[in-house]
Amino acid sequence: MNLLNISILIIVLSMMGELFRLLLGPTSWDRLMAANLISVKGLMILALFAHYNQLEYLLDVALTYGIIGYIGIILIANYLAEGRNDHE
Image (cartoon, rainbow, N blue to C red; front, side, top):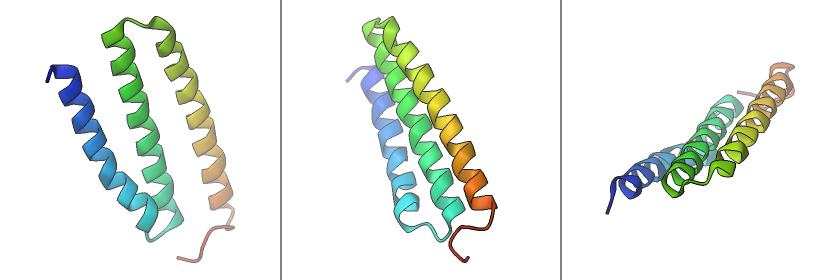
């Protein structure tokens, strides 16, 4: 195993904890934070893969994915902040 595989393995293992929180989180805010962390770690895996394989266009895809994820998180947070979330 090279360093890339070890890095991706560590990221995927850490994503398992967030997946558990996403499915069983006690509040909507916990689920939102877990979804955000999974998204960011997916970006990290994509960037590592792009760097290792020297695929520069994948970095553009990762950047676009990050921007869309950021906007989505802001919209969902605004929706939850308006009181339309589950009762905690």
